[in-house]
Image 1 (cartoon, rainbow, N blue to C red):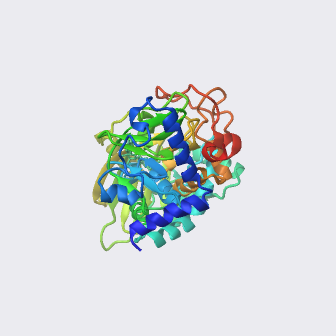
Image 2 (image 1 turned 45 degrees about the vertical axis):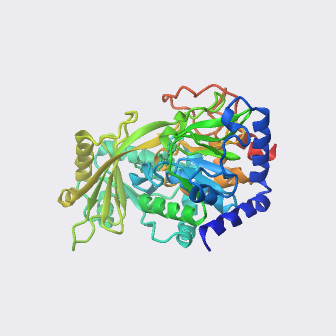
Image 3 (image 1 turned 135 degrees about the horizontal axis):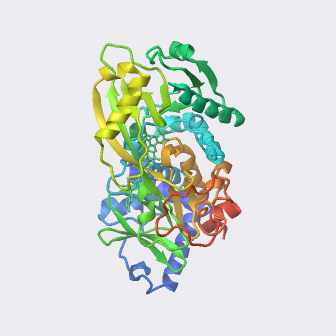
Length: 482
Ligand SMILES: Cc1cc2nc3c(=O)[nH]c(=O)nc-3n(C[C@H](O)[C@H](O)[C@H](O)COP(=O)(O)OP(=O)(O)OC[C@H]3O[C@@H](n4cnc5c(N)ncnc54)[C@H](O)[C@@H]3O)c2cc1C
C-alpha cells in the first residue's frame, strides 16, 4: 500500500475511531474563522488558497502546505513520536521542521534511567519516568514493525560509583531516596564494583547496582521514528514555523517563515528549547522552557579488543555528573556537562577537558580510545524539570515539550499521552501532574505535585494567565470534552 492510500485510510479512521475529533475541531475552527474574520486576514476560510484535501496531496501534489487534523511544530524526537502516535490514532498529521530528525536527540546519550536520575523533589517525575521505562520494550518492538533497523535498545543495567568519601556519602543519600521510593538498587563495595566492571579504577570506593536503568541509541530511535512517520502518511513540511495563528479564542494553525499558512484543528508545540519563542502565543499560554547546554563526547572501542564496559557507569566527580554509555556497536558515549549558556552550542576546551579528566578517574583505559566526536546540544528545560504535556488554556493548542534530561526516556509515554489528549481519550495517570497549564496563574506548581518552580529564568510570556489546563481539571482535552 502506498503512503497516499495510508493517508486516506487514516483520515477515514479519524472521523470514526476518534469520535470525529478532527472533523469536529476543524468545523469549529472554520466557524471560528468566520466569526473572527479580520483579526488575522489569512485565517478566514478560503483565504489561504491551501488545499483542504489529504496531507499527501498538499505536500507532494502541489508543493503547498497540507491541511491536516494535527500540525506538530518541531520534528525532534518528541515531535516525531507525537506525530507517529497521533497518526496511529487515526488523525492526519503534518510535522513542520526545517530539519526533522535532528535536535537534542542527535546529541543525547540515550540513558533510560528513572532510578539513577532520581532527585529529591522529583517524585512525580519518577512515576512518569518509570511508566515510560516500562513501555520501552513494547515501544521499540512496535517501532521495529513500522520502521526498519535496530534502535539499539539494551537492557544492560547501570552502575553508579563513588570515587571518594564525599562521593560515597552522596551516593548513600541517593540510595536512601531510591529505597524510600521502593526502587531496586543494590549497594556494592569497591571490589564488587570492579568484579562487575573490571576496567574500573582501583580507587572506586563503592557503588549502586541498578539493573533496571537501560539505554537506547537516540539517533537510531529518531531515524526510526522519522521512517515510521513517513510510512504512516505523516507529512513533513521542511520549513520553519514563524507564528501561531489564533482566531478568536482558538489556535487554528501556524504561519510558515515564507508566509504560507498551515491550518489544522490541533496544533502541537514540540519545538524543544525554542518552544516558548514561537510568535503569537497569547499571554494565557505559558511555555517556560529554557535551553540547558550539554557537551558530550563519543569514543570508540579499539578494534579486536573487548569493550571497556559492559553496562552504563556513572558517577559524581567533584560535584559534576559524568557517565559512560557503552553501545553494542563499540561506541562509548561520555557525557555530559550541564550549563546555563543560553543558545550557545559551542564545544569548549574546558568542557572536553572536564569530561575526559573525570572519566579518566573512573576508567583509566579511556585515554587509549579514539575520540571520534565532540558535540553540544540543548536540553529543553522547565522550572520543575518536568515536561509540559497536553492541552493549554487556548483551545486547539497543545504542548509536548520541556523534557529536559529525560526526553529519550519519556518518548513512549509522551506519544501515548498526546495521542490521547488529541483524540479525547484518557491520558495515562502519571502524565496528569505534567499538564501544560501548571505554570499558568496562581498556585501553579503546587497543584501539580511535580515539584515547585526552581527559580529558573522564565521567558517573557511566562507567569500570567488563567490557571490549570483542562487536562488537569477534567483529565481530558478541552477541544473534545466541551
Ligand atoms: C548532552 C545531552 C544528553 C542527553 N542525554 C539524555 C539521556 O541520556 N536520556 C534522555 O532521556 N534524554 C537525554 N537528553 C535529553 C533529550 O535529548 C531531550 O530531552 C530531547 O531530545 C528533546 O527533544 P525535543 O524533540 O523536545 O526537542 P529538540 O530535540 O530540541 O527538537 C525540537 C525540534 O523543533 C524544531 N523547531 C523548533 N522551533 C521550530 C519552529 N518555529 N518551526 C519549526 N521547527 C522548529 C527544531 O528544529 C528541532 O528539530 C540529553 C540531552 C542532551 C543535550
